[in-house]
Length: 621
Image (cartoon, rainbow, N blue to C red; front, top):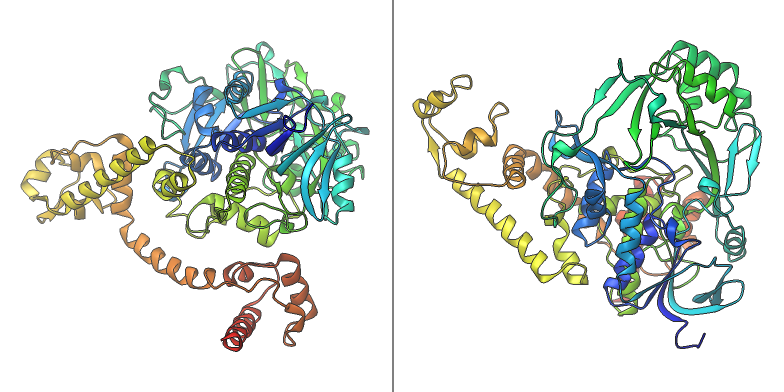
């Protein structure tokens, strides 16, 4: 291979959800890109649950879509069931969740990437990163060298991974795939701090061996739903399939307690840390001793297989113990397992070693994205892959990185948490993590991000104008509602169960909890799509809260925008404790806002830091 053909602007290592988004967006931005994977057929593989979205995660998928990423539209094309979560609660916590087809989803990803002119997919394992003067210059396989400007590492759970079940430990990745220790060892030699994490999967059950007769049905939405803002025709809800709910029993609990020492999670086999918010069934039994039962979901993995995913029964118990467990669960008394549950542990990069652009602080032009940064979930991985790809392109073009603040996107919250606070467990994004979640809603991701996307070139002029037109209509509608006044006689005749006493504007009426946008539109000539109607209703009903939160954001931005000088000497500040100096020096925060969120830093440290920066600024003047 000639030097000309083996040079790429960007090399992406790994074909999981982070790798897909990184490779796609780099190629879309006209960068010559290579995606290295062990197998083309495994690109987009879903080794765990085939769900996309969920609490907070669903909003991340909408943000990925608004920025020109792939996950939302691919989920829509392969959806088995979709629903909006938390509809009985406020708009800030409503999120989409979909079950997607495990067989067809990866095929869609593979087909999409194969059509990109600027992307080359190479089926070879990477053995080494080529580093010159603390800067990445390429990668090598067992036989060849590939030069590049930037490398994006998206190795997921495949670095020095070990699968575990009972006393069995195997050096392999998910679903018996290969694992490599070479990159882990090289990263350690380069000075990176690695952490050991673990996660688990449940058994997969053969569909026709399950008795569904007495199980609770968990249907999809009765409305058309879609992750993508750009999709023309979301799937008809009548095509959604049902999922089902069952529960463990006291007998299940007793079997687990009797066999805890046989679980890889509890027999001393592993010291890795597991996900707090997605625990194994063993963890649930131990942590919640007062509970005799735990809810489980039966979710179809694909229309092309008879495999049912047993959500909630993640385990690393031996096969024979898992078989006993199934017999104690209603509906699964005669169930046959197609695949038993197992746990996996792997190496991850401690994420405070990354800049907010996701470029590493130790090696220039090396970016990391996805589970290699200590996160859990397909959505968090895809978001990081997208941002690493965008920022790789920005760096090659000599432009500033695209970094979202915490009030702009859940993606901003995710990356700020990782790069500022770090994590000692598989990080999962939650709505409670976001201070400004009333602004970071499912419905307005396009409004929040479309200008950024257009500026960096990831959405088209047509898409940009579509968002402009949509929100112009929303603004016009809000103003119109303020100038439409409805009398009690007119209103009460149409809505006898929600009577009013005084003449009020349609806008003020919509603020009342008992009155919906549908009620209001009956008294106007306004025509809105369901999405537009939801936005108008939310902006009206939450106006007071949004105004209050906007004030908080402005206060937050004052600190957030105060830049800390590069290579600031924390060791020279006498009022700092040795621990404070250590924490600041490790993270190297870019702004006062970021500094204030570092674990263990207190307000007095921030006041001292601000004083020293101002003093330094006065001296420089």
